Image 1 (tube, rainbow, N blue to C red):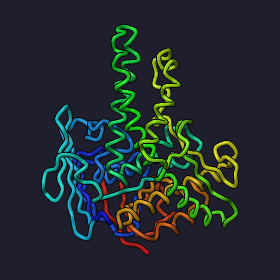
Image 2 (tube, one colour):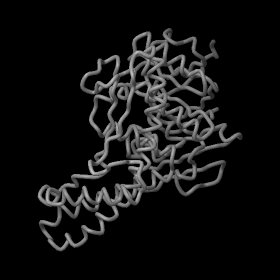
Image 3 (cartoon, rainbow, N blue to C red):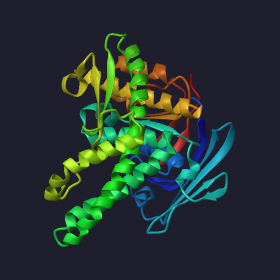
Length: 372
């Protein structure tokens, strides 16, 4: 899987740029605030219809412009393919195309261009709040399992409606009559999310453990544990069993939810923990250990996605190498020898022997020579 070329029109700070890329390592060079991260955002958006920086499509369009456009040529699924997006300001819906044919949604583009992003914020995800780790897991699972993405969206819609009932019932007590139906839906869809997550985190932990073992020279035992509601005795149990155990937990929190007007329990509060040789990494790990574990998780995510699709996803490294010491830089660089990689960097001479260079200045991109 590789992105051969990309054309941007009125995307972020790019007025009009056409770029070609190496199937190996592509080094994106330039000073701060010139558009390097915008380019990675465009690559990720091309394949998924999602930005890793905003949920507002209007923010992706160049200032004072009515539309923005992205178009890319991709080699994927053993053939050349094209992807295209047109974004509009205002309320006009965006448009997406695959091989010249207009599609209904981003789901019709699934699997053509898969990406794994690694940015400086990810280095400390294991020390952040649970929401950051849920985003990491959900983002990977949505690319791995399209049915998971649909279930996650449904769960979010039901959760939002239930939350509104809990808040509005002080003005209208009759709204409480609707709660049993929403609770039933949350338990049904929530059980499915838990089943997906349990299997994903089990595979992720094993793959990340192997990377961390190489990283640490076998000196630390990496373990990842999925955390969900306490009544779930075995997250690998049948979905029907998980649904009943979720309902049990929800019923035990019913009074608290009514008093607080908040949804207090469910997979929307899930988390995972990483330990090294039995010690909780978030509490006791050094900064170096936390960063090493985070790198291992991202490399493991890419590996799982590659095994599922049969193709190695495109790896996006947004200024992450500059945040690592030389030893960790070397480890990451040794692990990216396969597949296509995009690396942003502010220091021209630092990694300039990796592959093709692209220079970015003020939203203008210029191809550099193929190196190495």
